[in-house]
Length: 391
Ligand code: PLP
Image 1 (cartoon, helix red, strand yellow):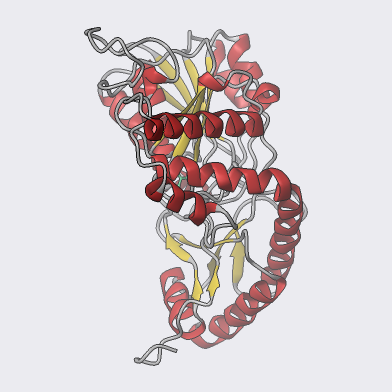
Image 2 (cartoon, rainbow, N blue to C red; image 1 turned 90 degrees about the vertical axis):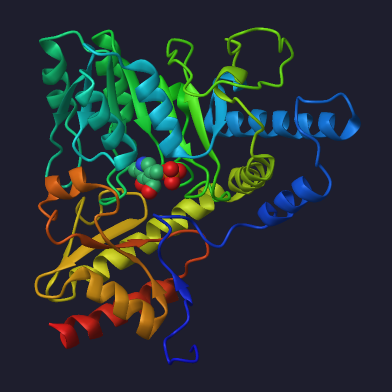
């Protein structure tokens, strides 16, 4: 309890926003980046700068291997998934182009698309079903009539936890000569991701969610066929400073300026941990999300958004109550029980419109690393009490 009688956060269930705590090695790697590897990578021939460059190279190689990226140079470090999706969409789309999107997109995709639409790009939004899953045939239908440059879809939903059929969407996109662009923010770490098998042209991810790295770092894979214009130009660290334009070589083309070395090394440590422990963690998350889902279904007045019980999902459960506003629930969960959750629209108004919750929002529980069955049971008990008391 804090001095004013409110509970302090003891149960962290907001992994959908950002994961916490981080696995062993992450903080240590970041500390090493600022205490030992202080040189600017690629910007000096002295030992410290060279060591920093090597550490980043190792991080890129290992993270690429973890994600099944065939050529590590196609994997760039970005400040986050938002920046990465902006790079892809704004870098590719030109007035007169056509893009097909899914109605569950986060604002990291929806807002760039809205801006592009205002600039003359035709944006066609395909409605997902009531569970928040996109229908491959509906996407195919949307592409049949006209030339389309790209299909863009999330890999997993940040409101529903639904897993989208991204490999099939990539096949459809390619059959129509379009690129397949994927927002993987909620998939990385929570699902086994193999870029080769998915066959997508762009896959962006946050470093700080399921990948268990620090905030301020993210990833973008671009296939050789996907060549967006770079949005930022400047120092590349790759020599040839006299060249007037950004070098075309990857990864330099998409990584102008001094990189986030502490973030990259922290992410590297997180991915190294996931490589050894990710499968067990995913099984644990699946068991926890099932336990929670089942528990909520037995509570009167609550409705769980997204796929039915038993259908695989990433460890997110968002719910509504027929009489209690979800922000009241989130507030009481925090103040009385020390349980951190997120109410509202989760930066995903398109998704909430699709699910019929644009006016009410929802209360989202994101499970992940560090959570236990006891956390789930405590959240269920708290919901049961609040559901009765506040209704
Ligand atoms: N896309 C989805 C589906 C998300 O859930 C989020 C984060 O909430 C983002 C994109 C934005 O990611 P980042 O915080 O790395 O910019």
